Length: 200
Image (tube, rainbow, N blue to C red):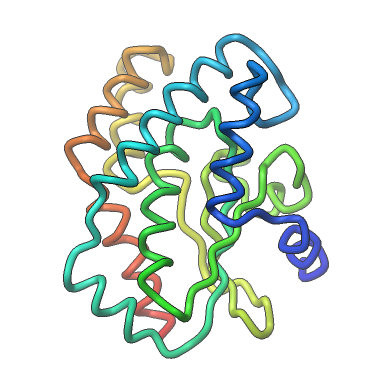
């Protein structure tokens, strides 16, 4: 596991590099990842707009800001993501804002399709669901915890929808984006900070 994590970190992107990569691929009419389709490019374009908006509007609560500034241990937050993923577009800007508030957190992003070995270590119910935030000890690269692919409320919304309709369709995806809009990133902050508090 450690060598997989080391290799992924060696090949990882900063948040700015990740954003730039997604943007430059869109200019070529492409999305990140092995699969290319009009749908994935369309999702990437929507996500670009979402991330631009979230970078301006996401607020980390005062309590969590204070806690992040007082972290004692040093961490790497390694995120598995892709530009076309709607959940990633909602969550990765929050991870970035939180990490920026602490000198003890180094945020790195690994593209899922470039890191099969890493993704296979962090499956969700057997699926390659993203984004996945892996919390590492900066010095030993020990995995201390993980979060994702969605906060609990968003997860429940999708489970309930699937139970009722049998599929995840465009309506479900729209409902999910509305859930994120109303939640304003608070559930994600809360769940991540619970993990961090336990580690401290």
